[in-house]
Amino acid sequence: MTLSFSGWRDGQTPLIEQALEQLENAAITNSAFERVRYQLQREWRNAPQASLYGQASRTLGEALLTPQWSTAELLAASDRFERSHLEDFRQRFLDDLYVDAMAVGNLDAELAREQTQLIRAKLRPQLTRDDIANLTPLAVSEEHNVLHPHSSRDESLILRYLQARDQTPQEQATTSVIAQWLETPFYQQLRTEQQLGYIVNAGYSPLLEAPGIALVVQSSDVESDTIAERMDAFLEEADQRLDQLSDEDLAPYRQAVHDQLRQRDTSLESMANRYWQATALEDVRFDRREQQADLVLDVSLEDIKALWPASRARSGYTL
Figure (tube, one colour):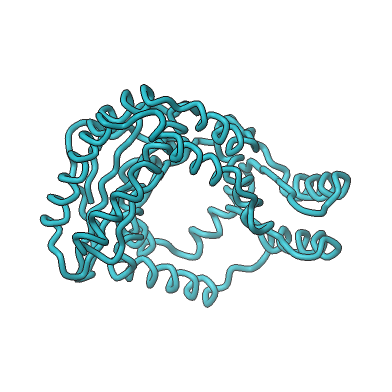
């Protein structure tokens, strides 16, 4: 559970106190419970009508991140869920907590510490970071698997996912440069020239710290088999293009990724979200993006040629 407070700092402490009081002691009425359960069930029941791209991304996450539960599993569990279960869970949840707190913006260190102490004194967390199970990215099988989102949309979508070999910063940097190298020709060939779909994209798509590349085509009038054939042909052409690639040719792709990583956050919210996501990783570092930007400039042609065939062999999931 994440509680986020934004706005003028002078009014945040009373708001934090009120939210914590509600979390601990607010009455859970039958009407409130049924209203929230109905809203969630409607969302889960309507999941097959959601954006096809969103469904594909969620299905991929369910296959490659653990622990994870599908919308169908959540919907089935909600049918057995009663208000008394929620009340029991709240008590067990509050009795066995781990708390992380972060302040970003114009709060000074003293006020940030005061608010953190307020939260800890109120919730009395009993667990440490080591007690919390982490989301774990799973390795893609070398056996090709086809995943089918439970969708009622009358459209076609192919998402081909290529996973790197490991989660090192160097592997992340190399994978991001390969994704940049693929991006423009993938769009040029499959969207501009072949007119295969209205969503066509190849890009860097990590799952937590596990680097990968997602190639996506979504169409309202082209069959999935045709899209898959054209995507396979593009990947085979990329194998040939790589044989002709020089280090001089690679330089603008390295620079483009470096410049993207060095861009400033456009809002305080985006900065806070980036830092907060960093706290979820085992190795908490707030300069991860800057580190990767530096590593990108050191990616060599040999690095690309070593990783690309390995990633092609680990393209184990198609949706």
